[in-house]
Length: 121
Image (cartoon, rainbow, N blue to C red; front, side, top):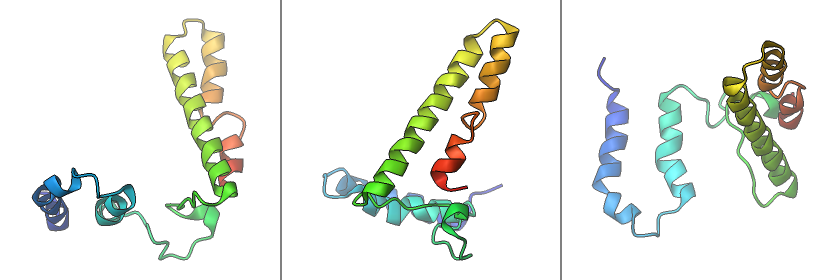
């Protein structure tokens, strides 16, 4: 199946302007708005919450790094993801079945609902 024309346009625009992007004046927000968000929209994500979902049910939650509460929630989520990744590594290396069972339980979503609490579910 050929890629969608809009995806090809994104790639072409990026390639055409790559030298300008590498000069250091193009920031993360610009990249997100011009390339990442359109890519996610092509994949079917509701980036702008056009469905009008409550915060806990949005496809994408934008973090305001000027807000201490948002920063704290972001940091908690990053810590939980790192914990889950570590648990998956330990699970892959573990040989004892009873320890594997415990690790599997904890590796699924943190195992204690903490991820759901951080995102407000």
